[in-house]
Length: 77
Image (cartoon, rainbow, N blue to C red; front, side):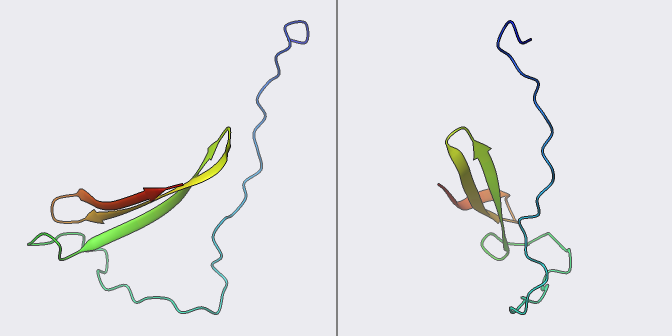
């Protein structure tokens, strides 16, 4: 490996990115894990994630309509 100039990929230590011990307001869980809707635009869910790239960290956020599972809005950067 040294002669060919290659190195083994090492596993990185886990780093938590969510602050779960805070004094901020927490929204009520209105859905109670019931992810079904009778009409479009009644229930939207969202998520955000961070993606590591060669240029650095990027984020991806999306809002999904539960009724038809279509992406209503998405942003990355």
